[in-house]
Image 1 (cartoon, rainbow over the protein chains, first blue to last red):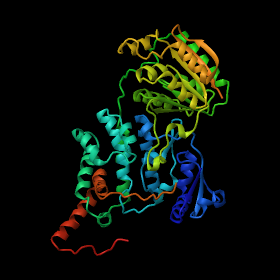
Image 2 (cartoon, helix red, strand yellow):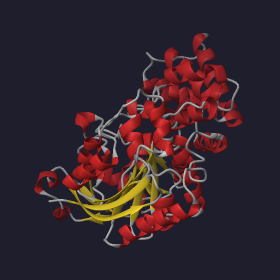
Image 3 (cartoon, one colour):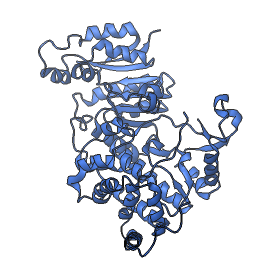
Image 4 (cartoon, rainbow over the protein chains, first blue to last red):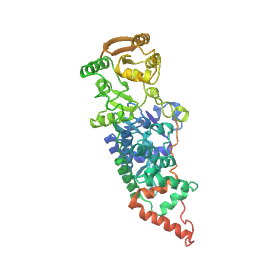
Length: 442
Length: 52
């Protein structure tokens, strides 16, 4: 991964690279591993305008804040603020504050934007503050104070939630920590000073004595505020699923062995666990796979999984909030700034356990459509099919008219599977649930 | 992808940073307003020192 620097960018990089802070950040693993590279390493197209080039370590899998559970966004915010404070002590600053500058090694956040560092202008307020509010603080407040998931807002706008919108949602919470200053007054001042040139305000602040201590006090306050934001996730239909599902320990053991054997049979740099729930099978796949991206549509479930993985200091599982039927699309300028899930790397193994009935019955995706999509991933597949007699399936069908989703039936599922995959192994987990291990047909 | 990295901090967002820091900002805020009052009373002319 290469980063091309302009002449101005190169100067800032040199200031950073010479600081003791830089060595510390690299040694702590807090900032992505970076080294200078030769201009000759670049394709001709880029080399023309470049004053310098840096080479970065690759992060295992790119993810975005609209896919993170609450505590991931919170940890990313705390990382951003910690780096800001450390930079300040070294007379450096970060010119922006966006969670898109944070990526993950499992549950460890890594700051990836070396170009964000610049030399400190001590008499100036933090240029990144507004962005910090829009992309970190307001989304966290929405979740903590209003139980309002922030994913739709962040996916809906890559810029985040503007102060006005945050005020519209949070003004009833004005006496909660941080809301009055960071939301209500922030929106009001933005109105009031909309027509004033930034240059004038900057000059006034400078003359009034805005300084480094004040910057540090602000970072400190924000750090305390963010650290205290908690989301009491509560019980959703899914958080208790791992303990309280429809099969017993023996069946769960058979399923675990089946997944373990499938993962062991091949080299797996990347696996997807679709509908990962409490992550039981993600962990099993991670015994073999270098990285398991564990996806689930239920925020509370992914939140709980992330917290557990973080406690265990796991790096082999990346938990993300995502629905298979509504996955992250290409977003931003020409659809190229943020990539859809599939464009971020193709898996060698896909787990699709206790999921088919949710996709096909609850979300009305035809069985063949589901299998077409899974085939398009070109990966080995472990799929579980609960048939119509399964209690969970019966529950999903109970609200529908008789005869709904007629294609959801074991024999036709198996035919459709065999049309697209070579089935290597079949095993009944319970009387109503069957596991299949399959390879895509050429 | 080529990109320019300069962010407009926003004028309101700069000023609100005087309210976020709590006690540390009181002196700066007071001074900011004192300058404004002096200017309003025309005791002092607009900005002698120019911005960079």
